[in-house]
Length: 200
Image 1 (cartoon, rainbow, N blue to C red):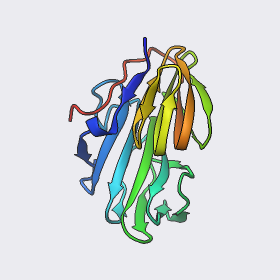
Image 2 (image 1 turned 30 degrees about the horizontal axis):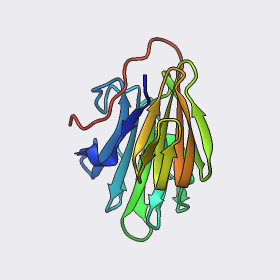
Image 3 (image 1 turned 180 degrees about the vertical axis):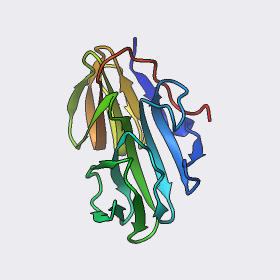
Image 4 (image 1 turned 135 degrees about the vertical axis):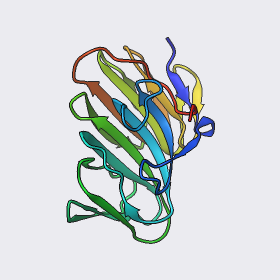
């Protein structure tokens, strides 16, 4: 089975859970899951104003600044400055979280996992790299800036395009920009399928 290519241009935007903004879902497990029943969910958000984050009980969150001056997150009363592009920041979806933008609109990259079902690792790379999905692990590669080429498949990925690898799939990526590599390891059980969210 060939890796699944997820093009940025095929995504539809949807309101945040709390109605405070818009997000474009890159991929989700299981296929068709909503904000209340996903195992893992990866998205890109355009944030025009600060305000409260939605609550996601039982969820671990990783947020990465992609574009803009950044934000201050106050997580259960503790302030955290997120103003370095491409530096993942992990926090709990159970926490009361407020966001204040530091200098206008931003774009951020979001990974959310049910912590009792899935463990997530997010790393950022800027040079040629090899990726492979081992057993019980999905690997999602997203181009945060520039472009990349799946050399084995001969496929070029543009900004915010993604590729999903599963069940032993792998490839070499030539990188002309910045990639986020998200490893999503199941903690046990059977994996449902994965799909993009143009369904909304």
